[in-house]
Amino acid sequence: MVVSAQAHNYSYDSLTHTEKYAYVNGSLNFEIIQLDKIRDKHRHLIFYSINGKKTQEFYDKDRVIYDTLRKWTEEGKLYHLEAYNASGYTTIDYWVETGKISDIGTYGIAKTAPELVIYDSTSFDKYTAIKCKTDEPCYVRAGVWKQYHKNGMLASEGKYLPWPFRVSTPTKDSSGIAVPIENTSFEVMPGTSYVVGESFLKDGNWNYYDDKGKKIKTESYKNGLPVKK
Image (cartoon, rainbow, N blue to C red; front, side):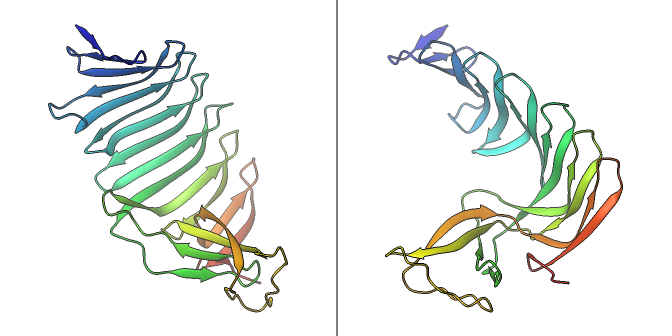
């Protein structure tokens, strides 16, 4: 039996405990299959493009994802996967054109980010470690991360500082005049505006290879910044 709500784009099947939400044109947008008597405690979620192709699928319990999360393009090609376990998860991206792996790495679970700020005296960028939210697992990058060429050959490999960083880049002051900052140091000056984003910073040695597998260079990083030779 299907029990429909008043909204034209929502329906609920009481036999399968499935909520369905539709696009304006009536095609399925996403569905939530309730796997527990308590609503939203344990779920199976599936999302679709307007052409009916599956675009994302995962399970969660108490809003924490487990097992495997997959993402597809609107044409139905797999481009992202996350495989979860008790200690974290492995993330894999794929080249849509070839179906081969483009990136692979591992996230581990950490309690919190340290009070860490990194200044780049060359670009004047400021990197601040982002603190974890208290109501969900805190995942940080761990181990060696690898990128691949479209033909499947290894392109680069190396480690990152574990935590994500908020990036602040100085621009102009409120009057539109460029703020002079000496190249030998970084100083947060009153009235300076900042463009903010998020980034992961490389750490240690990174090796790079051409599409035939030949090593072409090694770059070194310390505290997230390139080591000057």
